[in-house]
Image (cartoon, rainbow, N blue to C red):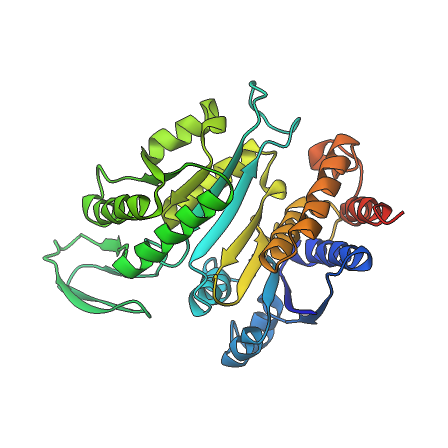
Length: 372
C-alpha cells in the first residue's frame, strides 16, 4: 500500500488530478499496485480564505507520505509569484527535490517538426539552485547600499553590496548560486540515470562562455564525474541547444541542465511533443518524498469547462508509478495514452472531440481492457 498526498491546487489542476486518480484506480484494479490518497487543501482558495500558503503542519503531514501527486498552482486573484514561490518552489526546497525530471517524447503525429524521426530526450534539471532561489533585490536613489541575505541547507550568505547610485537611477539584481555539493549530486544522478536507460553519454547544457564562474565550476565537476562513472560527456550552450532541438532532437538522450535554462528548454520540448498538455514531470528526492505533476499551469481561462488535456497528468502518474517501484504499471499508462492518441480519443487541442473527463475515461477503459 502506497500512501499518496493529493494536491489538486488551482484551476485545471483540479480537473486533471481527478482524471489521474481515476487512472491510478484502474491500474490498482488489475495489478498489485494499491494506494490510499489524502487530499490536501493547498492553493489559492485557502490562501485567499486564510492567508496560508504551505504551513508547517502541511509539511509535517506531507513528510509522512510516499509521494505527492500535484495538479497546478496559480490564480489571477493572487499576485504572480506568491503561490508559485510560497507553495511550489518552497515544497521543492523543503523536501530537497533537487532533480526535476521531464521526458520529451515524439508523440507522432502531434510533433510539429517536418522530419518524422523518433526522439526521446530525458531532461535532468537541477531543481534547487541557480537563479530560482529568490536571492536578489532592488535599490534606488539615496539607498547607497543593499543587503543580500541567503540561508539554505547548502550554504549561508550575508553580503552588503555598496553601489553608488545616480539620482535618477534604480537597480534590480538577481543572483544565481551553484554549490559543489549541489553539482556533485546533480551530476551523479544524471550519469546514473543515463546508464540505467542505456545512454553512453550525458549532454550538459549551460552558458559557460558568459557565466564563467558558476558554469565553469559545474563543467569541472561534471568532467570528473564522467570519468568516475565511465560515461561520455558533451557540452552545449543553451542557445545552441535550443536550435539543435528543432533540427536534430533525435541526437540527444539524457540532458543535464541548470534550473533556469531547464525551465525554458523543457517548455520548448513540450511544444515539440504536442504542447504543454503532453508533458509530465517529477520533482525527485531519491532518498525522500518526491512530487509528480503536469508541467502546464492552472490555465484559469479554461478552468471548469472540460477543455483541459489530462494526458500530462496521466504521464505524471506514470512517472509516480515508476518511481514507487511499479514500472510495468507505468508502462500500462503509456500504452493507453498511445492507443488513445492513435484512435483520436483526445481533447480538442489534440484534434479529438472529448472533454477532460471523457478523455480520461478512454484511458481508463483501455487500462481495464487489459484484464479481459
